[in-house]
Each structure stands twice: as C-alpha cells, then as structure tokens.
Image (cartoon, rainbow, N blue to C red):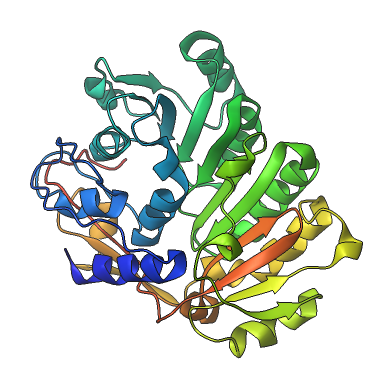
Length: 348
C-alpha cells in the first residue's frame, strides 16, 4: 500500500476506532470479502484509469460501507476512463448497479449488464428529467465527479435530490477553491436549509460535500457515537470555533451546540458553517507531479495539496440537526490524488 494511503487509513482508524481490513488484491476486477475503497484503489496497477482524492476514498468507506453486498443503485457523473465504475461495483458487491453519466460518447463502451451509461450534460435539467423518467426513477447514491463548475453542481443537486432514496447520499466532489463559497456552497445552504425535514446530515471534507437524506436514522454517521471518540471541547457560539480549532487536541472532536438555535440544518446555519470552514477547500498551493500532467491523459500523475491552515488541522465537519462536530486530525493530513491504471481517455 502506498505511503499516503497508509496515512489516510491510519487517520480513519483513529477517527473511527478500528482499522480497515487491508487487501492483497492484484486485479481491479476481483471482489474479496472486506475490500475497502482505499484498499481497492491502491490495488489498481493496470487497466481502466481511476483518479480520486485519497480523503474522498476513506469518506466513501465511512459513509457507503453499509451498502456493501446489498441491492444498491449508484450513479456517478463523470466516469471518464471507466476505472471508478469497476471500483464501485467491486467494493459494493454483485448487487450494485452502476449508472454512469458523461458528456463523452466514448464512455458508452463501459455499458454492460451491471452498468448503464447515459450521455448528457449534467447542467441541463432536461437531461436529468429524461434520466429519471426513462433510465431509473431513484438512486441510493449519486457521486458528482463531472464538470466541477458551481452552476453544474447546483443543477445536479436540485435535480437529483428529489430522487435520492431515504437514507441515501448525494456527494459533490472536487470543490476546489474559495470561489465555490459563492458559486456553490451558499446556494447549497439555501437548498438544503429549506428542506430541513429531508436532510439528516451534511458532511464536509476537503473538496467534498456529502448530504444524507432523512428516513433511516441508523444510517446517520455521528462521530461522537463512535466507540472511543473523545470530545475535547464543547462550544456554543460560532466565534469560538477558530480558537477551539487552533488550540484543539489532535485526534479529538469539538462539538458546537446551542439548543436555542433549533435545528442546525437551516439556511443561515449552513451558510455560517460553509463560510467558517471554506478554508477546507482552498489550499495554500496545488502541485501536479510531473508538472502539467493534470490536464493530460498521462497515466503517471499526482495532484497534491499544500495544506491551508484548516486542512492542516481538520479532517471533517459534520452538521447534524442538534450539533456541529469538528473532527481534528491526529496527524497532519496528506491530501493527494494519485492516478491508478494505464488506460486513459483524453481529457477534453
């Protein structure tokens, strides 16, 4: 397992109190019991290309593991070279049906008995209407790894959320830069905040936003309920957050709660949270290794973050109806996306 993946697996083990099973997988089409998303990803040496942020992989292991070996309908916007299709289907098991959406006609070659490919623009509401009326009426999970513009993210959220099943997840990837506060996050605050009864949790990771639909209480991830979790600080106002984070004990939780506020998932509450933690998505610098590879179809390529102050300290922020939970990293996170596989479609 590459060093960076070991670091992220260790972070998750500390946060959740148990280490994930490590895999000796050598093929990206096998399905051993206990296979994790980070373990699968690191096993891919050839075949279809896959490119995901390492912190997103362990976030998916945390939030999607309950779907393993159960009937699950998962869609991904932006399947590009097809490697992620194999990851979802292999890790989640034989009862997973994958729906891939992409603007590139070349991705149609990935369609088979377990994979349905739709060609269309995620920014077009008519495409989504056609998808949900003719392809599938509902999804358990949608991953947006598509065009990565604020308007596309907003359209995808508005069009997909009504079709997410109870307890399901809508995840938006690659939210890179401070500009997304106004291009996406504040719009998302209004969207989800006006649907309080439909939302059980909002989970914020660097470059990733996950919203969970209400209806399956047991499925909601609450870090304070994890065995061995340590709450090192309780606060009751948003201005207390910077000092609490700066002086917080590594590997512990900070809990913000104030009963007078009511449900924390509301337009103004979410706006304050997104504004307060916008630095989680705005690194000090980006690095493409080798230089310039990130906009090519090169199979050897790593995108790496020079952490912002919040990325140095925070693993994730969880907005639950009664509280906001800030997870402090036990060690400084290494945030990077290393390409795996050697068959890549050209980027447009």
